[in-house]
Image (cartoon, rainbow, N blue to C red):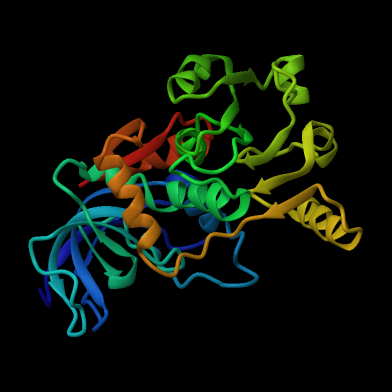
Length: 330
């Protein structure tokens, strides 16, 4: 496809929000030997995409402009690199693109073979595109850090999920219930019934006095907190944790990093643990796709937008009150 042009959405500098996104025509990318060229069908947006545009990673990994944002994609294989063995043209897949490079808001993108998985016919492109960063983050927090077993064979745990109606949160509630956990979720009043429908045993309106304290209505202490929200101090979590309780912070800032270090230095049994997702292989993503296929996990859509309206999707994500995933379809 050398020399062909494709439609894409990009930005040329840090900042600017949705207004900085530009519709352009650029060359279709060429896959390296370990990469796959995809004709994209759907891309989901994540808070990480917005944070990169704002420049939060600039001191460590400056972006190379222009940037076509978007990392979570689903589509059809068009071409493969010389060393690719798992896929061929015509295969339907889900992939996680390099967050520092992106490429998802376009008609075509290249993905590494090791972070690409087959997408069964029962899993739609939009359902698959919702999974990579959000569901992988929820999975890592619950399975790798909290120690939940998704087959329900582990000890019954009490789990709190903050911002339970959001992209990561709505997956975390479902995965925790698969692991036989007692789940308490926090959200706004309009989403209480939605979070209950995901399987949560208790739901707290974060704007009420009880929701502000994060106390479980049943009086249970939390073995782990999947903390997807912001602005909640350690002092609010600590009295609600079990003796060895953990707060798994998905959006760690300077204060949470200080708390993490302090708790480590003082050998506290109650821990605050920052979580940074760095996927290295496709095993977990494949598991999540299979759970969707089997009807055990679902991607809930806040909204769907065509590529021509990508600015609307970006603005919706910036608003910070999405229920489930925001999808851009090609």
